Length: 239
Image (cartoon, rainbow, N blue to C red; front, side, top):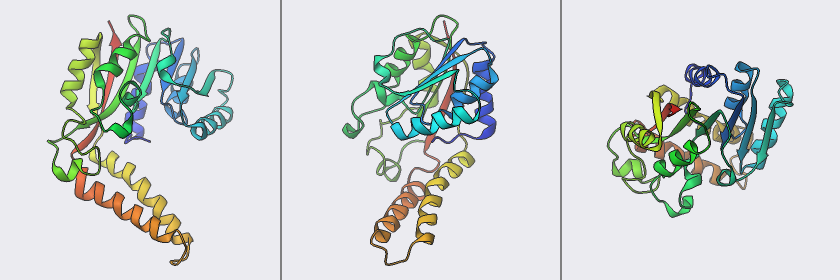
């Protein structure tokens, strides 16, 4: 559930696995795809993944069984704010809001609080993959309207790197999802709506709502934040 190509995912996995971690934590893991790939690449490691989405956790557990990793990973519904330190590596992509105000309050993304919390979870030399929204270009009214409606919801990739350094990390690398990755990501939503509409009659009771959702998503992306909203990825080492 993020604009992330196979090539970029492999890069992030290699960064974490090359640190020879004994333990890996994924915060906001979803169905834990990236975590499971890290465990495959680091056969001595055990993993934990936490998310508030019970359905995603169930899917992740099924994937762990298929990949023969069920004995090396613990996926559970849990609040990341209750976690204490002790992991060699941590993944946190699109989950900074855990350490901020409720999403419905439409406040700026709490990068500094998230990075400080992540630093507390790993020892010196521990590795962290951190990813979240950034502005790829100066925000426009059309871009912010379908988001939180504010220019300061996100910041730039360079500013996030500075915040990571202030939190006690040294950046190994920083990079940003490309427009192709975003197009693939957003097309996933469009495809879901299209499949539903193709499988249901035009006068289905839910058809109008689905058409409205599809139009809203197209407008928000193509006429709004495409090329403006970005996703930055940081490869960090605790110092």
